[in-house]
Image 1 (cartoon, rainbow, N blue to C red):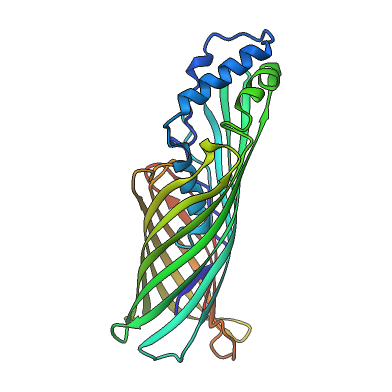
Image 2: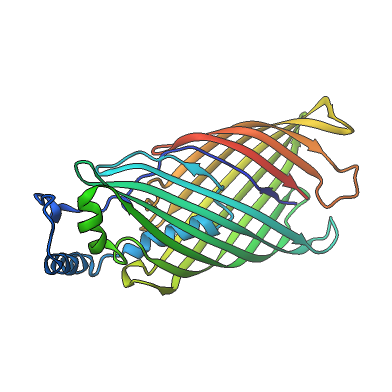
Length: 335
């Protein structure tokens, strides 16, 4: 039995090297109109400065964040960095899962996946009163196959392989006369206004541990994932993603039955705690590499019905960490 999250909405802090682009070569420029030859020359300079820079490695983290089911769907409001204002990351996921075999079998294969939609927004201030408002949109999804291996009555090992797809598209709006007439023709299809298609593949190893302690049912769900992200096509070479992301996820839930009922369904109080830690050279591409979650919810027991879903869970949780804070609305289910 695995728990799935279908609607976590968080507010937090996201900044980092992906957003913190350096535009020092524009210092001292005025609002005078530039000739096309000047724009072409500066565009070539920007392209030369980007040669050898792994710009797409950061986009790999964005795509993996959308496609990986192991990092909660969320909306984060990150810490601002110099020259970057109001960054915001929002991710929405719709999961599905099928398990084969009977409850109690020592090995049960399963198939799972999800669809995802994600946006990343930020305002870049290159000159006073001149902003580039950029948005990255990612559409994606993944399919995973694995086996539940019973190690004991309370512990299961979950080896999984996965394959996913992500399409990322960037669009920028420019404010002020310099932005429209000068920055737009320089950056279009270079740093901004491009699209790319990516392939995501990898494996994970999970551990599902459940036991009763007093009046509490304790659930411990741990997962270590490693994904490779590669572009299959891109409108500009600088948007090509070629990187890998490793993440560790831990969720601990304590479920305590109550005398309350919702209609005919018994209710339980649930205390939630979670940890996500991202590893690797691009672990801070989203502005943070780890965060904690703590919250409280209610769970309705549906096991009396002959349904695939045995329980529904709703609640609120807080997010906190070195570079992110926020809150979450929890909607989950067991099967």
